[in-house]
Length: 243
Image (cartoon, rainbow, N blue to C red; front, side, top):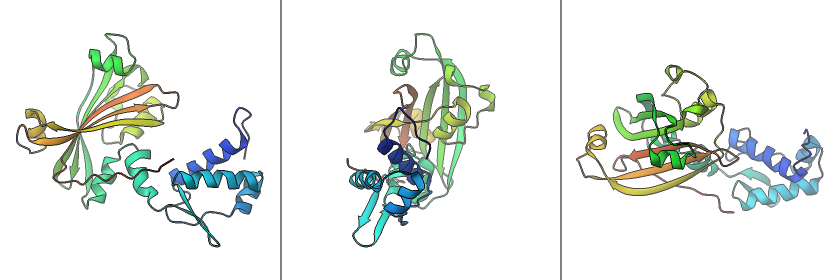
């Protein structure tokens, strides 16, 4: 392991192990290497590895079984889908037994509203990339997703953006940005005429709205999202690791 002077050894070991779990190198439910194997591989003390593993266990990422070893918490697949992968709607649709697909509806540049400019720390009059997309469960539209990204972050002409990608992949591929954390507000709302027509609902039907803000690791706002969710078709389950 190549050490970074600005970070403690324990922090670097934790970051590496979290990354392996997140990326599936250590798959949900699988047995992890032993303390001594990790110690030898990374060139750190067993005490450091033991401390890091204890923290990951408290966070719910791993399960330590006396006399058997350390296992990746199998429930972390659900955690990843709901949290780490930033509301992976395609996974959500799949987990409900449907085939997911994404249809881009609008990909355009426009001026930020006052509310959007404030939330994204923009100056009045700055432009946004506006993405409106429809998620399907088999052939039924179930989620209407509206996202806005500061146009200054976009590195390519908007005509090159593939709206069928997940929002995290859009940020990675076209903005060279990574999502570090997300703040989500979930509440019931009345379906407006456009949302009702898109999701085959009646106007003023109750529907779930997920308002999501995506941030980088330095707390810079990257994306705002308003997602309208047909909970009559999809079941939304949240799994959280407690610290």
